[in-house]
Image (spheres, rainbow, N blue to C red):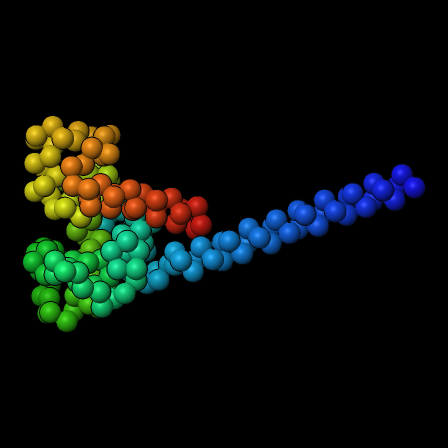
Length: 185
C-alpha cells in the first residue's frame, strides 16, 4: 500500500513538472509572437557590420514602429526605425549612397541607416544608454543634459533624463533588450 501511495505521489509530481514545462513553452511562444525577429537577415548583417548588439536593434524597432515598415510619427520619423528624413539622408551620404523618399520605407535600407546611426551614437557617447537617449531626443539634447549636469557622461544615472518621454523610451528599450536576450540568447 505504501508503494502505491509513493508511486501516486511520484506520478502527480511528474504531471506537475510536465505541465509547468508546457506552460513555460507556451509563454515563450507567446513572447516570441510579441517580440519577433523580423527582418533578421538585415538586423544581423548590419549590426555585425556596424559593431552593435542586434538585440538593441530589434528592441529599437519594437519600440519605434512595432515592425510596421510604413510607420510615420507626428514628428515626421519614418519606417521601421523611425528615422527623420534629414537624419536618414545624412547617414546615407556618410555611406556614399543616394536616398529617395520611398527608400526610407524599405526595410533593408531603413535598418541599415538606423543601425549605422545608432552605432554612430554609441561611438560618440561611448555608452549605449546615452546613445539610446540620443536616438530618441537627439544628440543635441543629450550633450546639453550632460553639460548642464542633468545626467553623467558615463550614463550611470540615466534615470535623471529630464524629458519624461526619453526617460521612458530608454527604460522601454532596456526592457525589450532583456526580453530579446532571454528569449533568443
